[in-house]
Length: 185
Image (tube, rainbow, N blue to C red; front, side, top):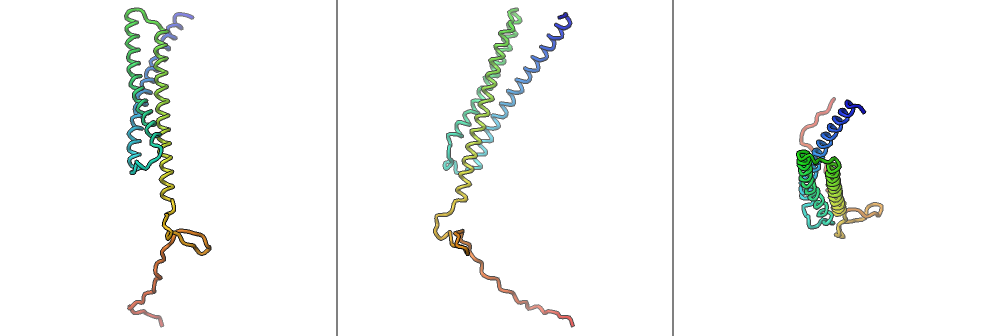
């Protein structure tokens, strides 16, 4: 390779590294926003949907889901600290002329794994919370449509099938009007 090609490749590599850094920062911000938003939305949704929370089923699923979201936030904060330390170490090594590309790659690899764990915990947390909501909505729906235990609730219809007792309204009597009627001749 010529000197021009080496310089162009070096510039391209630097551009890729900057893009990757911006992308990782954006990823960490998005994960933080999504997980904190999911926490708040879950609390609001559970509060509004299930007014009698003590009657909900599988509360452990909700607790584990919320724990995964909190873990996602915590891991993401840890990721910010690790990323800042990596950059400080790189700067210090460059200043001391001890910079090693392989050390830098190891640090970035560690950060990549931390971000993957953060993402996976977000997905698991959201899936568990959705599962809790689904199970309890189905349960509430079945209880709403459950027949009453009152024996007078059901009666036999015309064809012998049992159905809910329907109260009959009294028949409507035609009203007579005292107003004069006009006829054509």
